[in-house]
Image 1 (cartoon, one colour):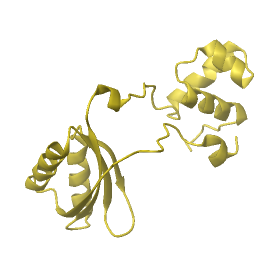
Image 2 (cartoon, helix red, strand yellow; image 1 turned 120 degrees about the vertical axis):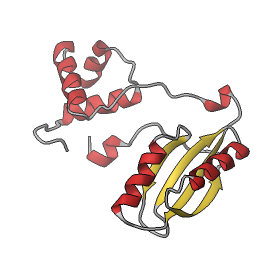
Image 3 (cartoon, one colour; image 1 turned 90 degrees about the horizontal axis):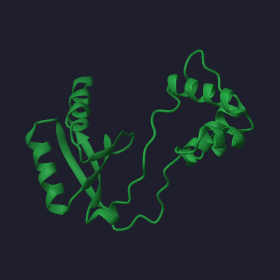
Image 4 (tube, one colour; image 1 turned 135 degrees about the vertical axis):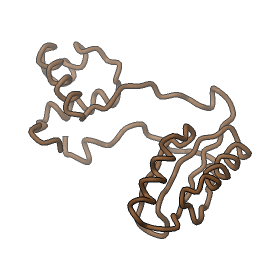
Length: 162
């Protein structure tokens, strides 16, 4: 939680509503959470300034645009020093095809989600990362065949009893 900012039940309702539809008007949002428009807008601005709302955007249907593949890659680094982690993460931030990168516990260090034009594109990308001497000791790739469940938001009411 952000220091100095306390969220109440209405703030959480605002987050739930905006997560479901970030394009709704302030009047519609105010009605949905039981406020008048002016106090609702003030709350939204406060939530934005405090970093609870990090942005608004559109969900893109990649299948409509063309052929792509999604690959989850387990990556293990050769060394586990702070410098290795920083170097690796800094380099991956510059790779457009990396859409998620998670430092995880367990048998490897990172779980990275790539979206590429195809298998050849992915392999070329991995070879480039290996050539850059980022400290990758091994990697395992998992090509996504089908995505039967993909949610764009978080279950806020379940996680925080909204």
